[in-house]
Image (cartoon, rainbow, N blue to C red; front, top):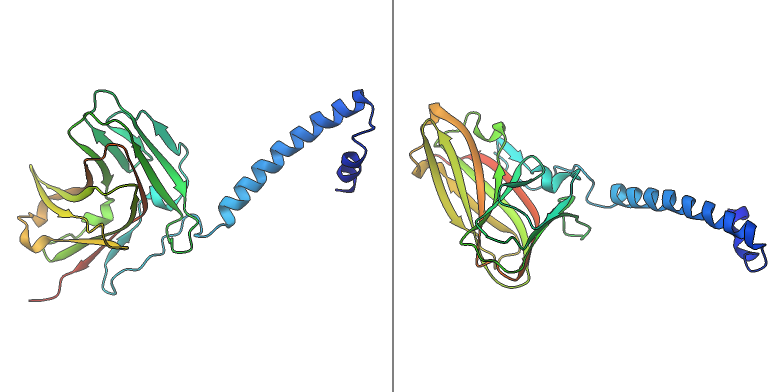
Length: 240
């Protein structure tokens, strides 16, 4: 540090040939320092990367936060997103636009109220399609032992530039059939929670194969939507 402090003090009188060498070395050093500071800030900031801590019902038998909200992705974003494009291994964007003016990017949460280490931002400019949905594939833990006695809860924190409607559709494939339950998200609330009660479904418990969630955005044109948090829990419903 003393060496670089002295070099900075005498830079006004250093010979140009020597100054050119020092500048090259300083630029190389700065690139390493910038990378170190960036990584350190990311890992030391709260919430801690990889955190799976979030509120859950006391009798929950399964709880999960998708990787998009849990840890850094190798490819954190994309622009002019084509339909069926995946961000990570669990989230897929679907739309029917002729010309995509959509961007999708993972971002680092640093607000005091955030529990999820990461969020995802979607920017929609001109939108000439009829549907836009973000599909989250649920892991096998969600379907192992799944019965009609279960309640599946989805909790989220969502910000948007202007109001729009968002629906969550639970899809459960059982044999040749797919059971679907749709809920509208209460976007006027700070913590957005919806529950899917399987007691009112026609689920064949013995043939459950997989499950996924569609987040369906109605009228998304010229809007920015930030999903700060997305978590899922499962619990048995109270006995009737």
